[in-house]
Length: 325
Image 1 (cartoon, one colour):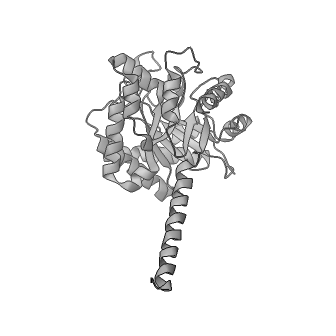
Image 2 (cartoon, one colour; image 1 turned 60 degrees about the vertical axis):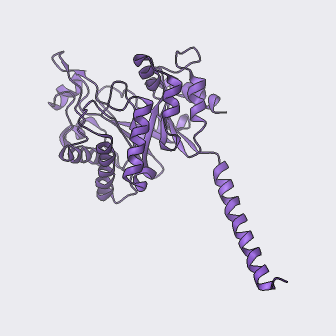
Image 3 (cartoon, helix red, strand yellow; image 1 turned 90 degrees about the vertical axis):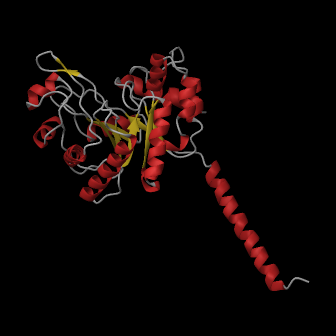
């Protein structure tokens, strides 16, 4: 006969395992929370990039949980003339005070994404095309200056960002590890300043950049996993579905293959647009295939309907919801 004390311990162990398994099962099958972003829009004349509060009102009307704020360098001749800083150059504190609308008493439940310099070329005030900004992720001094600019923008806006989105750029001296290290550095500097939970950091794929293919996105995520588990929990990829398609088409490669390469665990958000119009079923982008990938995501993530026309944002959100159900 087995003593009652041993039987009791075996029952307790069995019940404990059952509770753990049930908890794991519930977490595995929990539907992810999908948050929508109100994308950055052209602001009224004289306000340049605007602020948080006007965007909050517009976002609330269509059920968006985040607003997007541009954190580009000087991006057009209008901003160049106003600030005296050349296009594609980093912002100074004085330029930030001029380009953004300062806000006081920002609501605690207002959440926003800083969309940083994408590294595009621009025409300057003399109509001359200037080269794209050099994103120097391998240069710690430059990364520190970049971090200081983001902090100054958030100070002006009246609240720290919840998510900071960066881009790979064109500088092939920067390695995947450099980008990951820079993300950690920006997080730490930003958190030290605000004394606030660190923002999520995400990298967006860009056509023609050093991270443009599905394989390169996988290499980036592998570099992040190798670098630090902590960084991997709070940093990742924002996958631009149509940009990935256009990259595959330009290179004569397989879009399904690109999608297969993108690591599901690394995706923190997606962008949905068509250059940058509202998407439709008649697009060359195979949206059903793209959203089949999105439906594999089991953790919380955000969707930015990256449309710069106010009357098309709600339409794009509806397009996404239709394909997710």
